[in-house]
Image (tube, rainbow, N blue to C red; front, side):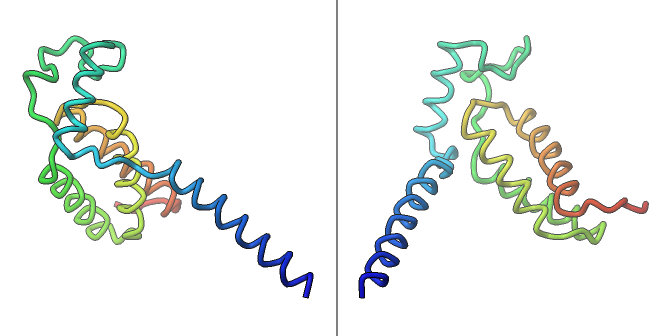
Length: 134
């Protein structure tokens, strides 16, 4: 029937839009050496994107973030939320925040840790908004 055809076309159109939006929200794999090199090169050419703020560390003198760093931060976040009996979903939200931030700029391991602590703080506030008893 004509209504079924229109409904099917509408569903197809919505799916196409959703796929386009999903592509826009995808986070690149910032842990690959090629991506890290590109971020480091961009930082050298545009110092305003740096996180060093006068530190002696630079893309050439600091080690890039790798899978081990991300694994350690993720494990630490899970230990934190488990210890305080918070929602484990907070870690997923926090790591999403970390991934989005880190994929857009070259950062040092020190800054990576600061980003992760800030992200888990924000995520806990979003997912578990009640007051924490110490």
